Image 1 (cartoon, rainbow, N blue to C red):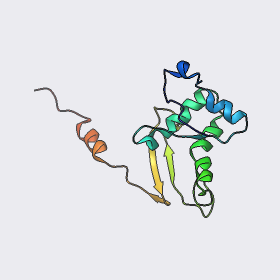
Image 2 (cartoon, rainbow, N blue to C red; image 1 turned 90 degrees about the horizontal axis):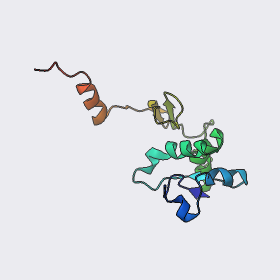
Image 3 (tube, rainbow, N blue to C red; image 1 turned 90 degrees about the vertical axis):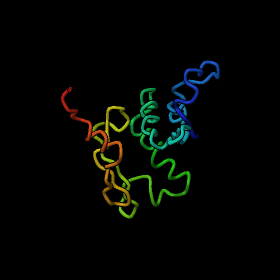
Amino acid sequence: MVLDTRDNIPSFDGLQARSDNATLLREAGATVILAGQDPGGQMNLRFEAGHAVRNGMRWDDALEAITLAPARAFGLADQVGSLEPGKRADLVIWSGDPFEFSSGAEAVFIGGQEQSRTNRMTELRDRYKTLPPKY
């Protein structure tokens, strides 16, 4: 079952839907995959998982719903979806709970190689972090 935990909020009532659908389906034994429909939705998957946890899903089940469950569904579980010897090592190290808005990426590894986190936004942030005194 592929779900967008935040889709159609606040019109859930009109759809007869519930914000804990992912939890109910998982508890019933269904395989749940969390997805987002927004452009660039892969960047928000962690928030989909956080929303599911906030609505009763176990943290481990939410993590699986954005990692191993999709890998299994696409027949890629032997390559990605979990940290195991022989699998592609894609990993993000977070400053806190990855499902929290306040957590940020501390390090990113793709294929086992650390990636630079420098981009235009970080360069602008650093450039203007300390503004000159008023004149």
